[in-house]
Image (cartoon, rainbow, N blue to C red; front, side):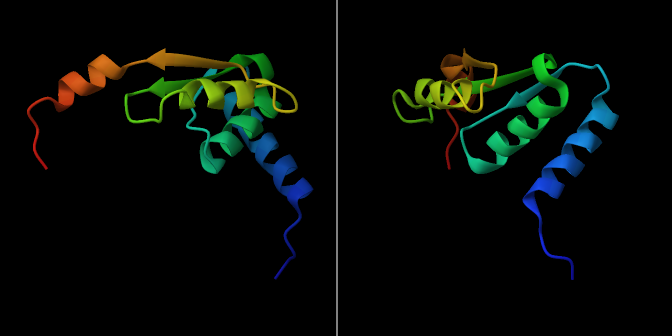
Length: 100
């Protein structure tokens, strides 16, 4: 079994993303977790300014968490383009009356 090499992994994934995306624009929903942040970083390396990262403030995050995540992702060394969409009312209205 071949030993994992992080640099090779990044290079391979960025190449695949470029092949798939070309010059298209992309939107990635990010939560600040490892999975979505890794996808966003790899995509940003691949397509640069054609990427927009969106945090959905859906009323289920801790108070101030969307802003903290946006700040962390948008500053060096990541420098991701991040927008926060406040969708609390839409999420809560859909859940109104539902029972678990």
